[in-house]
Length: 169
Image 1 (cartoon, rainbow, N blue to C red):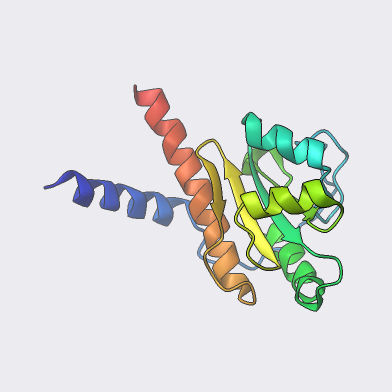
Image 2 (tube, helix red, strand yellow):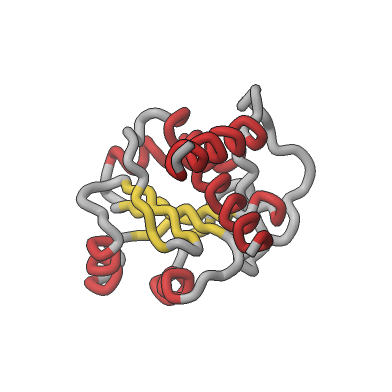
C-alpha cells in the first residue's frame, strides 16, 4: 500500500467520523463568548484590516473563514444570508468548532483593497479560509451552500487531522 493510498483512506475515515449524516441543524440557546474576543451574535463579525492582518501573521488557535466582499455588489448582498446560515450549521463561533467566521470589506480603502487582492480575491464574493496551514480560497461555486458547508467541514477535518499528527509525533 502506498503512502498516498493510506493517506487518502485516513482522510476518508476522518470525514466519515466527523461529517454529520444530517446537516440540518439550528443553533439554539445563547452563544458563548466569541473566540475572537467579541461577544458573539448569530452572524459573522466585520473585521478591521488590523485584526485580519493579525490573523494572517499569527495563527490564533482557531480557523477563520472570511467573506471578502464589496458593499455595492449585488452578489455579495445575495450571498450574505447563505454565508450566515452555513456558519450556523457548522456551529462557527463555538469554541469546540474551532472556527470563527467574519466579513471583510474590500472596498473600505486602498489598503483593504490591496489585502483582498493578495488573498486571492478576483471577484466578489470570495471566501478565504485562514488556518495554521495558511490561506485557502474556496474553490467552489458561492451560490451553492452545500459546497461551502462541505468545504468548511473538510477544512475543519484537516485541522483536526493535523492536531492528531502533532500528538503522535
